[in-house]
Image (tube, rainbow, N blue to C red; front, side, top):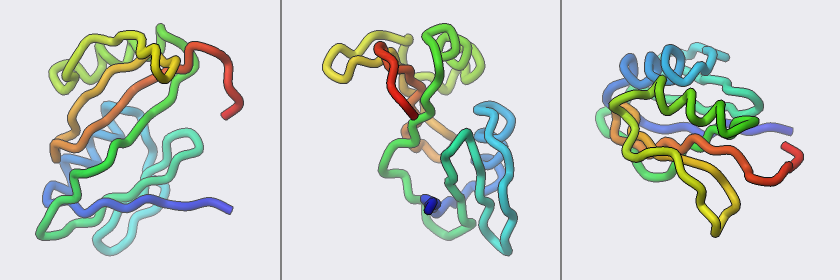
Length: 115
């Protein structure tokens, strides 16, 4: 079993480019007006619409703090904050904005977990 989360977007090409070129996702499937991307075991899609779904958070989980720090450099001005520990969730994280203004989180767990 698997699943895909879809988001409507008014900026399809810019959003897909951000996730492919900046975040490192791959195009998994092209449809008439939707692009499905894959990043690790996560599938998510963006469909060209006259409105934008900007609620929710896309969270990308990495193996180490160094990986999160590297992504902070890669996303550059899209980052909202510096990477930091979040004791409540036992993670190291930072948030950024995609071209639609959607929240994007980059994190690693402070203690090993099976993904």
